[in-house]
Amino acid sequence: MNYNFDEIIDRRNTGAIKIERCKALYGSEDVLPLWVADMDFRTPDFIFEAIRERCEHPILGYSMPPKEFYPSLMNWISDHHQWEVKRSWIGFLPGIVPGLAFAVQSLTVPGDAVIVQPPVYYPFFHVVKNNNRELINNPLKLVNGKYEMDFEDLERKITPNTKLFILCNPHNPGGRVWPEETLKQLADICAKHNIIVVSDEIHADMVLDGHKHVPFAAVSESAARISLTFMAPSKTFNMPGLISSSYIIPNDVLRHKFVDFLEASELIGGNIFAYAATVAAYEKGEEWRKQMLDYVQGNIDYVVDFLKTNIPQIKPMYPEASFLVWLNCKELGMETDELFDFFARKAGLGLNKGTTFGPGGEYHLRLNVACSRLILKQAMEQLAKAVKERV
Ligand SMILES: Cc1ncc(COP(=O)(O)O)c(C=O)c1O
Image 1 (tube, rainbow, N blue to C red):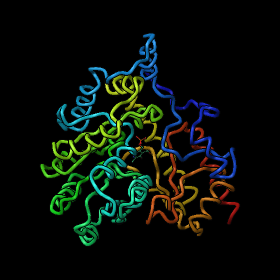
Image 2: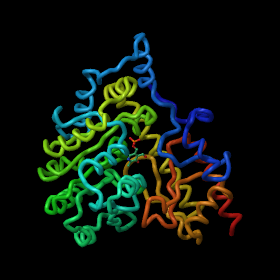
Image 3: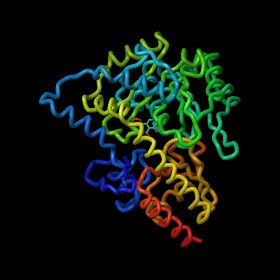
Image 4: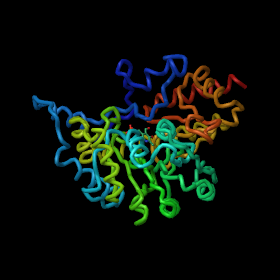
């Protein structure tokens, strides 16, 4: 079956954050919304079928995950990432960002230091600062147009107060798929200093051509011992509104601490539709996932080629995973706020402002290309026209 990713779907009046917040953020409801990291593609039919099937039963009572829930996740991880996960290591998590906050709350105390690697997905900062922990930035380095980890800076910044490291694997907004060697080195440093690593792997199933996702916990025994891994089908199968993710924690002591916190806060359950959709995604989603990634790859190539030919001042970072393209717009000669306004008001485009991702985000914008190619073409043409008129 060939899925149609060219389709343009009207998302107005569905409460879509991407649409609803445009006026407040970009000053107009008419910008093309290319920001929030969900897709404008139709959520696949097998997800709706699973939800409809559950609706056939007349009672929507308190429910446990179906018996297929954990095996479907374990098989998926084994098939896609060659990581053999034990049933006892896994549990349901009501969202990955909430999971990051629970990790901060359960594994550190106020005043402890938590390390993140900016530019990075901005809730990483919020879960640290809003819980009164000290935020330590270990900025990524740009080497030949790709982000790399700066281990010298990391070692310099670690103190006895440093308790947690939040890793984005693969990386958002840079789309980097971290090499095994990098993750091993990170694991060695963190293990040496007794730092727990929370690895956010929500983008793991969207690795693009020629790259391979490596789960942090799978790189070494010490990585397994010090880590919590969070995974979800929500981003890959375009169902983040259902809220379904899982934690994987091989170390019994760490897992008990984390789970005790979840239990004490009554945060252990999901909803029946999230359960049903998750099983359907993992059991029936492979073909759709492949076709979706082919389309996304085509969109990335289109944007990269278009910019090279028509707006060479904008340098995209070629993503190795996912549907987000990190645009370096420094050569347009504007400060970040001005750039953001220029994209919104002159080009009619709503992108994420680079500085929300922390240090290193200056002069950048993040573009979401998970939309119909027609929309993307319109976006690029609007941008080229605005840049031309400015000169
Ligand atoms: C790195 C990363 N983690 C987590 C999330 C969101 O996870 P959740 O919706 O499960 O809270 C996103 C969404 O963009 C993301 O990019």
